[in-house]
Length: 151
Image 1 (tube, one colour):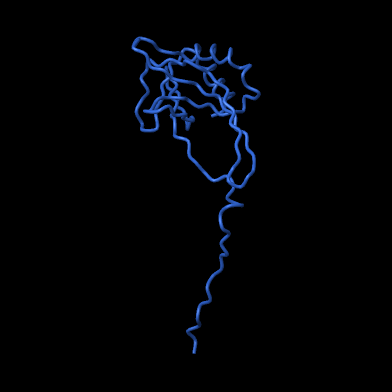
Image 2 (tube, rainbow, N blue to C red):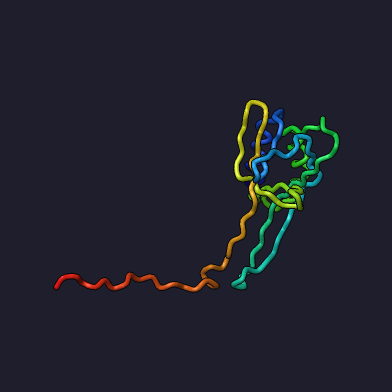
């Protein structure tokens, strides 16, 4: 989910709570805090030598011992409004950074809106070769000759 869609969803349900379903289908503790909103840029070369630039909005989660704390969508909108100048574009993916058990960035796979909560379903990032056209061997695909049975 990109930043603009994420922001619009939160803005249209300001009184809704927020829940996060982790990739193992467990829920993040409901008393999580958003401790950082970051603009992350990653410049890299793929294995074929081509340059890439990825940008993302990363929301860092932190779980404290204040189990009565809950963040509402409207509060997160206020935080994101202050962070907007960090982003060159709002067409960037939103990821949650969570200790699961090591610090991991989890993109939003999907979401569900119920009567009083927005549930974001998070997923692991997946690796992929970005230069398959260069570094993977080309396979010549042809059908083998089939001997004739007619004699």
